[in-house]
Amino acid sequence: GETIAFTNGVIYINNEPLPEPYVKLPTHWNRLPQTVAADEFFVVGDNRSMRLELHDHGAVKRWRIIGKVLL
Image 1 (cartoon, rainbow, N blue to C red):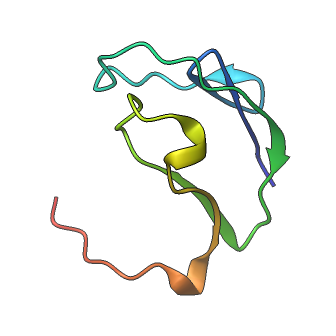
Image 2: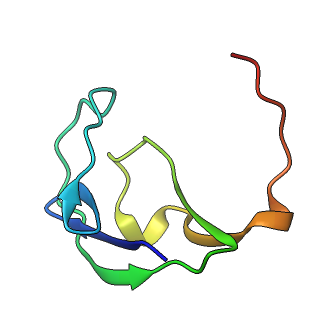
């Protein structure tokens, strides 16, 4: 139920900027707000030097995410 947007490379979740100290290069990504459903996650990598159009990102259904927590 959260809203995700990009403004000048900064990710906003519910209109609050997400601190991302690991993103070192400035970007100019812009994306209109999108509301993510309760059974979805918004995924985006930290390689922000790529143009937004060339980057895989967006809402993914929970059942499609497979992984193991290591830490």
